[in-house]
Length: 547
View 1 (cartoon, rainbow, N blue to C red):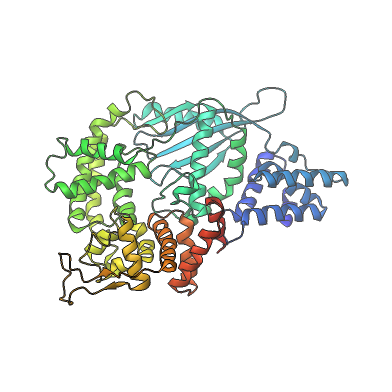
View 2 (view 1 turned 180 degrees about the vertical axis):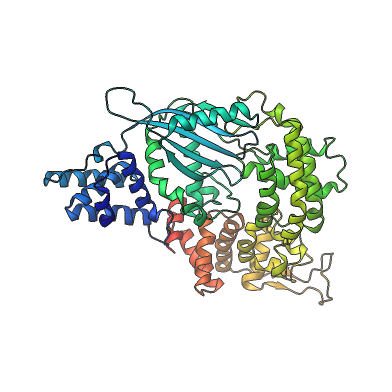
């Protein structure tokens, strides 16, 4: 980096230097090493190396990190390094004193009325301390709502007036395009929320409810986000956010849909005229639960928003990657989704009539837009039939086992739940759904006792079927051992956490150990040791990451 910085000393424009150094600082964004804070190791290591170099290039790097560093300790150390090198007589480049010295002038949101993406346009001028500067550049941030509200792209242009004129002209000519000013505080809230979600996916903690904001990234991995323009502009985006006012009209919070709220919405749909033609009411109920879950968890709490791209993302990426559908549900899903599109297109305007149009609101769709969305449903149906293969089938699981392991239909939980309760996939407990129900304390205890100690005895001769009366093949043995009961208590706490996936670090640590050839018993012991040693949830996540 110091060698690259030498070439940057001749730059004349501070924006060019900011873009170049942001790209340099983005080279390790998203890199993960278990037990190592890569950002701190490389970022603060770079500052120490630049300070020790005692060269103009090192001073340029320090000035850039002081303005663009992604953490406060990084920036503070860089500022101390700048002071130290200047005291030794080194002169900073002309552009160095202007890095980060910008004034936010305006913010706008650009997108279409389907609401699939929002382009947040922030205009900045270079501050000179004498008054409001003229526009120098615009930062455009693309938020993908079908992908989970993540930042998908960032770019910068110095042709500010031309950009704004083109956006206004397009909005005036195209009824499906919107372009509107938003407050600087609102822009800060929207960008901050999108960055938090992006950082969760990049950091691998996107499914951890205990680690802060949650997000389900549809069809996206950390590798998809850390390459290209987003990584190159990440440090610059962070620096620009700090210049936006933290007060004022913040972005509206994401609606929180509790279980009863989702049930009420599903009941309203199932009682509607649009749902009246659905023949299998049970399959329709299960399907609409998944549609609502996708809208609430992926689309920023907007289950009523419909669009062709959202339909495609739901059918071809989210469902195959996260949900196990029974055969009757697979057959019913396109028909239920089409009915939902017709119903949501009718009720969505009522849901947003009190809300100003802007980012995060349910768009008002004309009939032609609803028709285009319905066309997308039927165009995706054949691909859905080909793409969706029961993801449990290659594992040799029966539908009865799938129902036990995935009562919520969340396929992402299958592997960790099989690890926590492997007997659920076996023939041993096939005929005792109530006795071995992992959703109840009694059922978890019975499963773990049988798994760990085999302490269930035959009460009647094996006849090939589980008795439906009181004479089960398996019943708890009457003897008790206090030490074994304490051991079961520890494993029950661990198994319950694995079942719910809290924290996500727990299953990631287990997978790392399993990948290294550690047997299941030793993995369980290692995880339990960290659970007992941790002082709180934050300490637990830190310990698991280092395991």
